[in-house]
Image 1: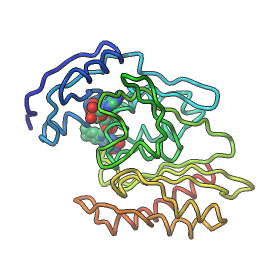
Image 2: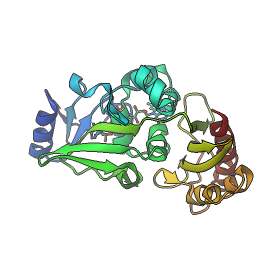
Image 3: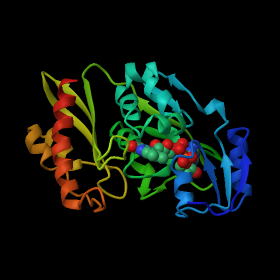
Image 4: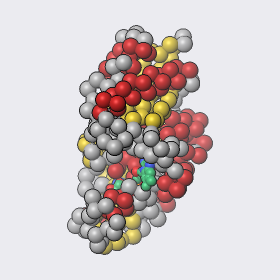
Length: 280
Ligand SMILES: Cc1cc2nc3c(=O)[nH]c(=O)nc-3n(C[C@H](O)[C@H](O)[C@H](O)COP(=O)(O)OP(=O)(O)OC[C@H]3O[C@@H](n4cnc5c(N)ncnc54)[C@H](O)[C@@H]3O)c2cc1C
């Protein structure tokens, strides 16, 4: 439970962090430390250098833009949970941030760390995917916006380049005809999802016209339940659409659940999520 030796640098600004990433071999950013430090203690991760970005206060914010809400990557889960702008315009994000771990985790962990870590079992990646959000990476060449559907590339892998810092997450403002649900099943209250479903739906005359459904812990990355989405778009019932939720997924088998049970959970939780989103 003791990490391998590492160097430690404090980044005074985002540009400083980018410069340090370019200057140091095998360096990793340290944000809240609630995924990286446990991995280092288990020697699953052995960076030669940690670059502490935790003191860069100007990357902690929630701001209103014309059609979206911008969230600074270093905003802690507790602040995402409490953010009035998110609660008003995109409540699925604040709700899901409140489902992360326990109060201690939410007081240290950041939304950017959660996304950059690329853990398919995490809560916020599935939510940002279902929202078709955008992630802004800053590197030596400037900023680039990455659609959420292109960001998650594998287990603990993302589209971020080694010298890039994730600086902002953008989510759409949801209108009055948009419903949502984040439905999570875990074995213990503070655990990662055994399976979770994020659903964002467009309603008309009391029924769902379109749905965006993303699954956590059903494969190497958060996954869009495309068969379910297609069934809804073609006028299928919630029962019929949710029965397709596990199509095209490759869920893991581990101490929490077998792959078959996860597939069952995906169908059941998708049904619950769509039913909730239809009325919320
Ligand atoms: C007991 C426990 C329970 C937990 N339960 C849950 C849960 O139920 N659901 C859930 O989703 N998560 C859970 N977590 C994880 C938690 O949400 C972490 O806070 C989060 O995954 C990582 O955020 P962090 O700020 O701590 O990142 P860190 O651990 O500091 O970093 C994680 C990774 O992201 C990189 N990184 C961090 N910030 C940036 C950035 N701005 N740009 C580029 N790279 C960056 C780091 O280099 C590192 O590779 C739990 C953690 C613990 C310890």
